[in-house]
Image (cartoon, rainbow over all chains, first blue to last red; front, top):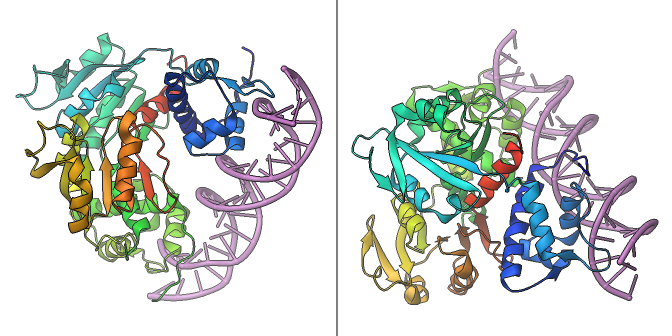
Length: 211
Length: 211
DNA sequence: CAGTGTGAAGCGCTTCACAGCT
DNA sequence: AGCTGTGAAGCGCTTCACACTG
């Protein structure tokens, strides 16, 4: 290993993914080289922030020139472990769950949704966007024979905690939770929260009473 | 006005919405009074943080006792301007857009989705989850006769910027963007980003190369 | 005495500014 | 000269600790 990686702020990791989106866009436009100012503007930040974000992982640019779009992309993919295939399952095949099964980002390499689960007998056995729906009872058994990295929770808030407990007992290390509640979980489990209600309420606050 | 409100960190506003979810849960369980430690644990933070978050807006608790679940809820709703009705529109009636039209949180008071827009002639004129789909061409005209507070963008990344420009020209002050790109917008426009790809990639980073 | 409200200290992310390559 | 990489300064959020109150 060329570089010992120090603690990296979570905000930095989030920005790295944004830089990757910008680079994909630039590459599609045929751009070969880019400087920190350009990419930072595209990503909605400033050049110092961009360079500091990269500096945690060691130099990759060329002084006086900038960054190779191709090399920097590869570098970021490597940092984010995007070379490693990840198996996902989705739990809760309602409105939102069905849409997520069709969401291209969840099928794009290295992410693969390998199964969906629901407790509704009418849905079990069907196939939604190419993904087989199984009964939630069969979750633990399924995970025993198919390693799963991330569980996507698209279930109602009222049952989210008990489903999350099930997921943890099955040995899945990470959860992407769409239910609008904070899950109580052991500290070694990774959780990311996507809360649409929260986003609306934050906008409501910032809009204020007048607008 | 009883209290001059200083600058409030965005992280605080986000937590206020979480506290509100916890209070709704507690009220459903018949709890009348709660102390900062209890609610903070439910929300995934600590008691000092909770009290500091509230302190920006002036005292509401009772020393030695805690907080009235009902009063605190009302207080938070007031702070977040949730007494004020908000009209939303959704742009992009694809997979995700259709699911969002059915998402209960987007219909729950004070939020109302009043119209949806798409450029696909096959979708225009249909009704999805009770919401009429109109042609994107008619956006500006619609907004002129129906004030809109928030536009939800559920369009492909490639067209998100041009649709956002359209939204801004129509005079809509806030955007909830689901496309995985950073929008370039005038500073007075409020934006919240919901980026599912980002969430997966952050999990991929934290999972590391081993797990 | 239990629990709130808050100034002040602590700490971590962001920004600055410049040395060092090309 | 142009632009990167980075120690150090700046700044804002979080945590502490305690005066205060019911």
